[in-house]
Amino acid sequence: MQYLPQLIFILLTITAVYLFSKKAKQIKRNIFLGRDEEINDNKNLRWKNVLLLAFGQKKMFKNPLVAVMHFFVYAGFIIINIEVLEIVLDGILGTHRLFAKPLGNFYTLLINAFEILAVLVIIFCATFLIRRNIIKLKRFASKDLNGWPRSDANYILITEIILMFLFLKMNACDTLLQSRGYGHYGETLTGNFIISSNYHFILQNFSNQSLVWFERTCWWVHITGIFIFLNYLPYSKHLHILLAFPNAYYARLIPQGKMKNMPDIQNEVLYAMQPELAPTEPSTEHKKFGAKDVFDLSWKNLLDAYSCTECGRCTAACPANITGKLLSPRTIMMKTRDRLEEIGKNINVHKIFTDDNKSLLHNYISVEELRACTTCNACVEACPVSISPLDIITQLRRYLIMEESNAPQEWNSMFSSIENNFAPWKFSPDERDKWVSES
Ligand code: SF4
Ligand code: SF4
Image 1: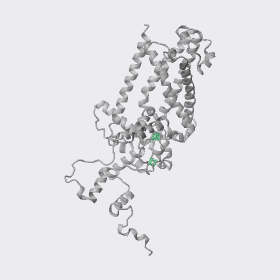
Image 2 (image 1 turned 90 degrees about the vertical axis):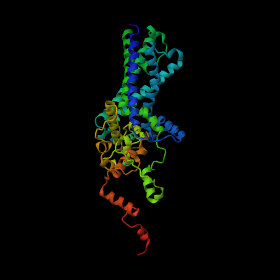
Image 3 (image 1 turned 30 degrees about the vertical axis):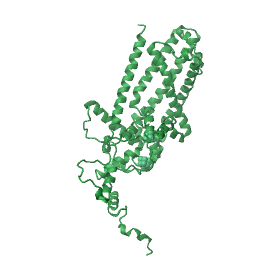
Image 4 (image 1 turned 180 degrees about the vertical axis):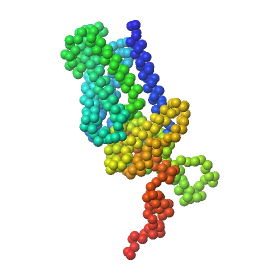
């Protein structure tokens, strides 16, 4: 009976870690359903990107106030995990504040810092909730967030606030019991904490037993909440907390405006100009141009889809969206992720992917959305986590044009002019200089 809480805690921890690693493996498998793309050049610059873009959140500082708030919420989340480590060890070993004695005064300093962070997290999460639900910023009020995506953001913010309150209340009860010299609490002399100890007056009239009950309840709910949060992450846009780091490492290093060429097409043009270079044996392999489904996108495109925070900065910067077109780069990323998750579930059930007669192109992303893109790159520039919705758009559009010959009449005239006249206009190349003649 004495070891029952430890046993329950160990079972809870094993279950939480097992479920999280199972889902993490599925996400990794889903990402690598994408086609291969070699990205391992310029390692120094890539590590610099991890430091600046992921840790430093450099792009967020375009709006310093929001960046500072986001940074504290994020830092609070990361740093408070040190405190979670102590909670987990206490739960497994049946100890109480394991680090307090060995760390001495430094321990009190650490918990004080965590408490300040906890208060900042509460204030800033509440501000984010107000921005989303009361002020209703345009990029959070748009229709593409209706339903689950909007609730997801609210759930996480509310959960963070609750977790921080539990942490503060647990500390308040603990230090009050210490000051009363009660049981093993009396032996853990951490001293008062900077925030929570100010609330002793609210708890003063409670008996020692009630305080122990409060403290233990906060401890259990706090750690159970963290385990639930851990397992909720893979289903949420907040997966970016983890994936922003690999995504920053594998970020595109070539200049933003530079388009990726298709080597197969380049070769076709080359062989047309220099037939002597063409292979003597015609290839029997059917090459697909562009992308129809997530399998045709690269693993980096799919990592992008899982890393998207759904912040909408890309959509707010998109000229097509601003001028009322159907296109929203945020929705492109959300739909890519939805399709990938659907395929993942299909594989979970059938062991291998079983054709479901659907594809990312048409079933998820429409021709109208794709045609609206001006390829201006504003979405890529605006994204704080180095995602390129444009890369997915161009690949789907290439499939549309080159595999389905699906283009508006105006584009077809332009294509045939390029093919015949080497320019988008309907003039013969021989007449190209005519405009300079005086007549
Ligand atoms: S590249 Fe396309 S999707 Fe991105 S901002 Fe420009 S128009 Fe919008
Ligand atoms: S692609 Fe980038 S900017 Fe757009 S919603 Fe996702 S994280 Fe935000």
